[in-house]
Image (cartoon, rainbow, N blue to C red):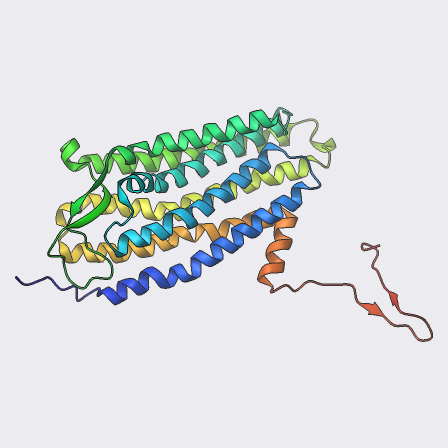
Length: 343
């Protein structure tokens, strides 16, 4: 029996496409997010532990979960037959939606918090119990949105085209994937599913953030207290812009994957073995583009939080930091010249 040979995208080319960008994105993403967490902790040492900081810290943790828990296992899944058993198969399949919907709900909470604090002068620092409840509700909501992926997870033998293989497999192997054609009886289910997720996780939260952003800005501009706002309101306004930037970046980077999925499932009847290999290659590129969000976010945090900028600058500038230098005057002992701002 002859085997189909993937001449257009051989196994070695697919492996380079999978692992070379990962070797760059994964360390940079981990390092920048760890630095951001360290900078946030430094920032909170001299400030009230407002809810907004807990939400920002949660965003960092979701990005770390994407890098540490999702992507390495996804590469294993693409490279070999599923080796981790049924339980981890079902658990793993919730990570993509969970790590998308969680940050989306957090950014909605951030813009609502800014609206309440800036417009209605609400308390920015609720009780620890209330903060815990808010973060727990967000996590449970994200899990609920990801639950269909558990229901429709298939852990079974299948003909799996691995990225390192040059041939179509002759024997089925254990696979872990989402499959509900036979259960719903129509390929339309995939289209409805992905379009609904895209609208609910990205488009609807983006609209909410944009509306509340402009409502808040317009109310602040018309407020009679606008000219006499305190200094503490400035960082609150900055966090309003931070939320807008984070949401925009979130939608841009994740839209590529969902748009690709939607286009693929609208043309799935035209997919053959050769076309599927091309799909694998393009999907790898799209996934790497999506992961780059975990590198961009820490630099958005750094733009608004000085301590995060300080830590990132120190690490990525190889420990360089500007120090006071002694100036020797003739006939005088060593002195240190301080500028007015330093003094």
